[in-house]
Image (cartoon, rainbow, N blue to C red; front, side):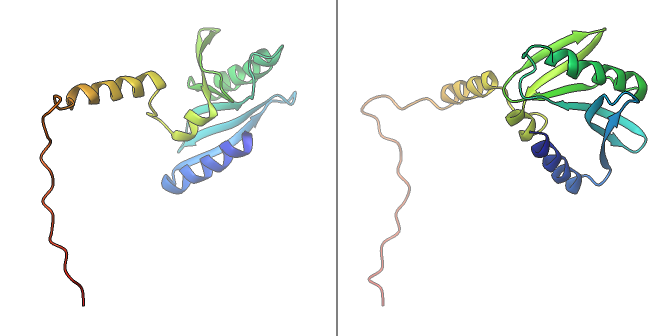
Length: 147
């Protein structure tokens, strides 16, 4: 997962040359996988974690994330997971848990319920013709006999 995130960040950096990313490590060896930065501002901290609900994993991931957030002055904290989704509030900080597939789609990717609502709205915007009525057909061009 971490490699997939790194590759996607490289791709995003190709589109946005001001995007930089690093990792962060404290003197005790605790790490944050990705520090996203534009200019002098740290924009977001990202941890990669397959299953944050496994015993002891959430604490192991959150500790360095919160510490780096304090030291780097960053409030956008994210854990990219395999399929876990949600939010945690820890020490007054909001931590977003986002599945890898959604993170790879990028900011603004529709949530399943949004896609369902959009599909439902499209059906209502384009009603099906009543039984027995016909839709106008497209004009047909005569076929040539060929050379």
